[in-house]
Image (cartoon, helix red, strand yellow):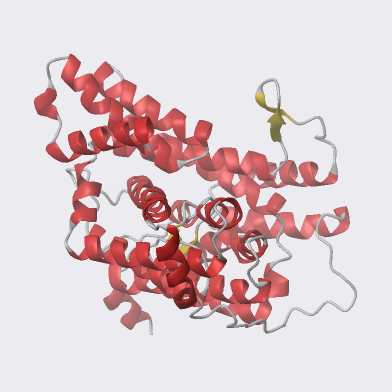
Length: 437
């Protein structure tokens, strides 16, 4: 078996081994397993059946991640995206008044569109057109972004009307205290260079959370419970008449835009952190990775969930040493297993995964060294990319800011020849979007 895996995934060539890839897969899965419960909660607000969405979430994540691992040989995991599910539920369904079936039809169309532009190579062109300094900035920006998510999930940073965010005044509350304990444990493990530090930190924090009352094991708890419902399967077909009568352009454009640049940002940022970018700063086999994402979105719509995208939490597994598609295959298998052991997986609280996100944020910030801050035309767009991700809570908005300011800085400094036609066109399109759409 080891020889087969070695030959297929080229483990030695990538400087990794079976144990490392498995630990990386476990770590990635543990940091993103929250989507199994969070996605159904959000989409059920749009009227979708909870158990059907849970099954669709798990199966679509498994399918798309398996394709990523076997076809693209990358350690990236996919699942229905946060933000995109909120847009689906609260903007498209509740805000615009469309049925959830019509919203699924819009997701399906955006998925087909993604497949087309991936086959034609347009998505790969977009990825490769981003300057190297912005790619490094994307990695650092994602680091700050997921660190903010971690601090938020840990209840350490909370919202504030006067200052937007502030330090919580409940540091001694069980939830926050557990997250702080987990952060200290994980940091110590990392400092001692213990393999699997992030995963071990998640497990230990979850166990500590039991006597603290944060992790509750109810009476009659059973770790095994099959939860599969296909009630939403194929429902997107019923939504086409309503979608076409309503007018589909704005909905589909919004879904397409956010997913396109979220995915590009995650692939580039995670690839940079893992040292996967080539000497020109491009991601090899980007087309295959983007195809996995495209198929995932289409399959997700058919199964009954919002847009599937590459998860930024994949960086947790990359930090643990995951370098090949075997990491993704492990994640896919674990997703399928959750259909059998979902009660056990859902015991892991956000306070246990939050420290992992903060630690990964620390490690991803190292990419900032690749930005030439002595050259303001490189530094300013990179800074805007980094800053806008956490401040707008969006990878896509950060990328947009960098793309807009990069050609502007080069133009006013008389160095427009250092840009390329693709990024110039993208900058113009982003400006038009913010001004008129």
